[in-house]
Length: 101
Image (cartoon, rainbow, N blue to C red; front, side, top):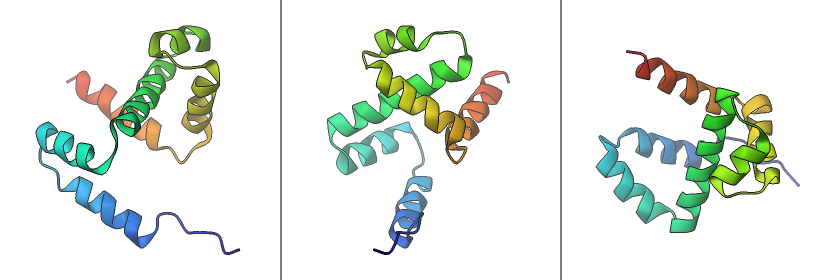
């Protein structure tokens, strides 16, 4: 079976569309139409876990309890934070830099 390439043409089109959102309100509308509430909640939870892991102040157990997820979920996010393509680090560093201004 041929492996799919990432990002595909369709995925790039989605990301280009996201880049055209102008503000938080537009993002809320678009993502609510695109995703289910559960998908939004799961994605939001993973992002919160990544933020807490990035701070390096809390144990996996404390993060799991705070985010109401299993330590397995925290471990999965930690794996992608450390060994992924760098997307988590990119946005977390950018958000950290913008909060210092």
